[in-house]
Length: 183
Image 1 (tube, rainbow, N blue to C red):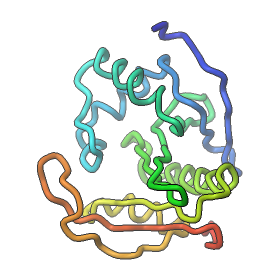
Image 2: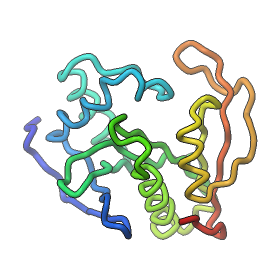
Image 3: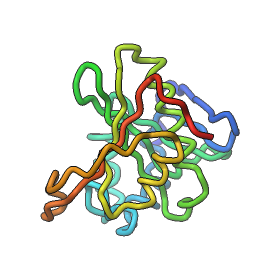
Image 4: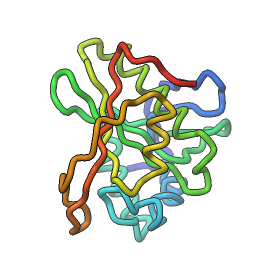
């Protein structure tokens, strides 16, 4: 596959203009490597850190480009600093997930992306009654992102998932179409 190959770009920008969301392409591989090779970024993710450019190309080709709703989180220069995705749970529920390069943690970029995508989900998919997020109990930064957007912390799901060989407790968050966004 040609690394310069691009797909039609649908760009959605945040109201602040600090970030935009667009489909990832194979040409994003070098930017992807910045966060995908970082063990601290991958700590609470289901995947292990990427170890080679070839592995990154395979992952983008097999998992990113084929994903039904995954967008690169880009700054003004259109270079990805992470991605955000929506996964189906059932007909009325979707799960949101996101990852951001460590260099950009604590700057509100993930919060803006989650707010933007959550609003888009309800516009694009009117049948959706709930967007939910499962966050490791130790991932306080991600929990804070969701709280700042306006997600409701519903509780701890004890011994809920096996992640990287360890049974983990997860915090369940949800956002309904009637919930107000926090700004």
